[in-house]
Image (cartoon, rainbow over all chains, first blue to last red; front, top):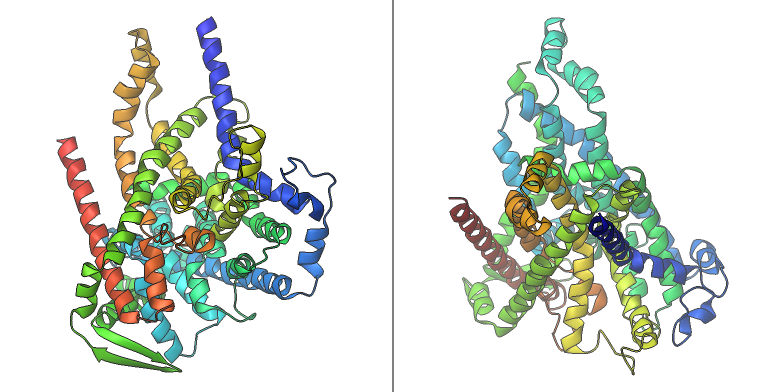
Length: 281
Length: 290
């Protein structure tokens, strides 16, 4: 009996350690963002802020300065791009997934192959030629280009998740609708999609999170305030010779709000999305 | 309209996007890899050079150095990162209060934008005001502050540590999924037979999560060979090339030296190496199964 109690205590300590390891960088960034500037250059550092203030948040949200203006533009561009990519991938992905599951075009093998291949190719393979193609089409430094690239990178995953879900919808429901005179496209829009809420949602938040955080493509393909995304704006912050760590951490915290909220509220969907590929395949 | 026609119509938009943005550029890169490229303002001049880009890459010590650095990353990610992931997954698989919260919290390093993760670690490693030096100094482990990212031998391990932190949630989630498929009866039965928890782990848990371990090794290898964001933001390949990974070398070949053809050749060589690795893995795994 006593043995199992000791075991429980050890487990508890290990769980707490695991949580500290996971959250420490985030906590340190957060506490930097709410510290007064003077705290940040103390040696050794203060473990808790001497007083809480939101000056950095005020500066980053309202101050007119090269870096802060770029950050705000970046947040706006990233929102437009990520939301568009999420909707596009869900919409186009469900059309394709339905065609694969029920209308017998292309086999599932193709989806797996494209999915694996999209994961395996080093991004530079794409970048060199996309750069040449985009400059010919005058698409360099536009939001549209990033939307297209991200959609292409996300679609294989989207189709894979949606295909897995569509397969679980009983075919009888669709068959009886077909007998009642629905066309296959009506079956998709009136029956299959309304029944697939959770899968559409999983796909949407998944594609949103990866588009929100993508860095390399955005770094290469965007440079002006009209298209530069949040990660690129933050990287510019960090590249300066005198890095304002307080402002930088605040930028990081603001950029983390959407994914953190998603992780807290929709963890079930993220876990489902992540594991749907590996466990079933 | 026949079902088949409708099917092709539905798949068309996705197919067009994937072909234009993924398939065509891959082929075009293959073509570029046989040329020396010269980028002028708005122009691209191609001079055919045959296999030169490939031969030069394979002969270049710089390439193999970068490859070795990356392999070192991959090794750490698989051995340390996956063990850590399995350990935390085993903990989170136990019944306890707030388990749901804990499972949401471990997702954080996965969902945050990679550049934000990089800035967090850059601040932690800051040699003057950073968390790591402050903590170790106050605990009495170090007498002088250490320049974590400007010492070549240290820098690579610091980047690897950040990379492990970033990659652990994925392993945790995957292992949790695998652990949940193991029937509880197996453990109950072995407990009746007097098995210790270590025996249960080696005789039940470990064999049953082996397929997942294989999948994770493949995914981690593929993903870590692409590591770029962290290196770009923390060290930019330095100091002294100590964190020069292939992802970064290819990027600077293309965008600093503007050698598009060479960069394309490098990425094809890397792709072949990754495919060979995955093939070897699957062979090893199959022979284990038999």
